[in-house]
Length: 286
Image 1 (cartoon, helix red, strand yellow):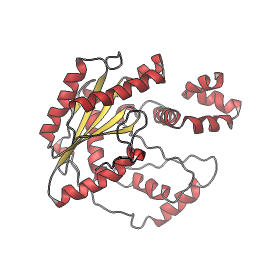
Image 2 (spheres, helix red, strand yellow):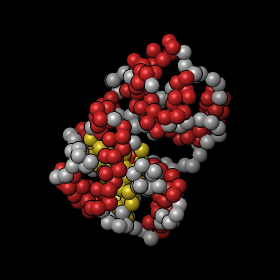
Image 3 (cartoon, rainbow, N blue to C red):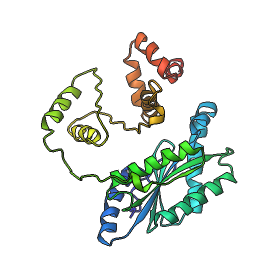
Image 4 (spheres, one colour):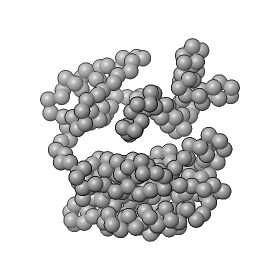
């Protein structure tokens, strides 16, 4: 589906497709596969201990590894398979007309091949989560959640593993494009986010629509950076982990804006923040 010459759909670092491409591509693919009653699978790949390479050898070396990893995938996958850089060291592989069983074989092939080589001089491990459409999700959000949970389970089993959805975990989701009777909630959140220097926590039981509330509110805001991450139960007892991960992602992907914000902070604010995010000390030295 990729249109030649549209570089806007390419990740500049790795040459893989990017999130913008995914957002356009996946909607059309799901429509097509629904129309013809067909199936496909996705692999969600996460490089094991990639942060160690960045921390010890620097981001330039890390960038080389990411590019080398995409080159590796391109060599062993079919031409029809789509490689998409989802963010950081996470990638999605779209496997057309592939059921879950065959997706497992592809994932295992990736693991077997990568164990026998070095990428840019480094031994790399990868964990993989799998989901099949429509078996594991009838829309993109449900499918990605299943793949993300499968990836989480793979990492819990140990590095270099494949995670597969469990049938009993598939729960019915009532599709709705917009909230019903949540007008006041959205209005309050919209006004709250327009205020300066405030932090708001939205919490509640799973499935009540917290993410959708934020996304619908976000659509009505300008000059807002929206960062989204997965919260895993294994990290729930570790203080500040979600905030550190958000800052790290923002630092790695929006470096210029990060520095502009850093300049506006007071010395006392920088000192407190540096306890959570040590890279601030490096920025101060630079």
